Image 1 (tube, rainbow, N blue to C red):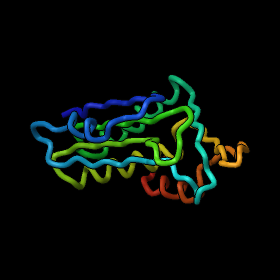
Image 2 (image 1 turned 90 degrees about the vertical axis):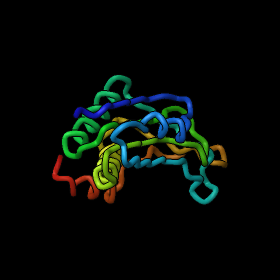
Image 3 (image 1 turned 180 degrees about the vertical axis):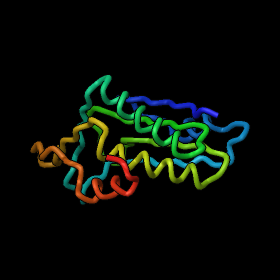
Image 4 (image 1 turned 120 degrees about the horizontal axis):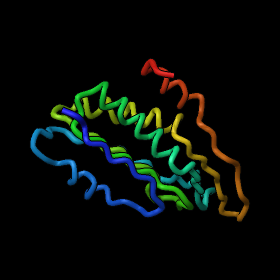
Length: 153
């Protein structure tokens, strides 16, 4: 069975419950979600500004999702990543994986997030509450190390 892939990059927020409901169906025994939320960094951050490379970002995320679907018997994968200005407490990213059994759904979601953090062409800039524009945020060494555990460059 080929997994259904739904990759979206959008400025608008998303409804996590609605996205989960879309993946319910015959053969689905497990749905795993990861939602990334904008932190306030101890009150310092007013917003994150996310930029992406249109076309390339969708293609790279689809490639990562196809890789996950080839590794685990998932029935569906949804990845939604927002761009634009995002305030603390707002959604940034959603990964939803569906499978007959939980192990595959958990592993695929974990894999997807490790590679979204390190390989998807997004750039994040911090905007501080004091009105200053902060730095562009890079992937951390911890993010890079997490991605290496999957045996893929």
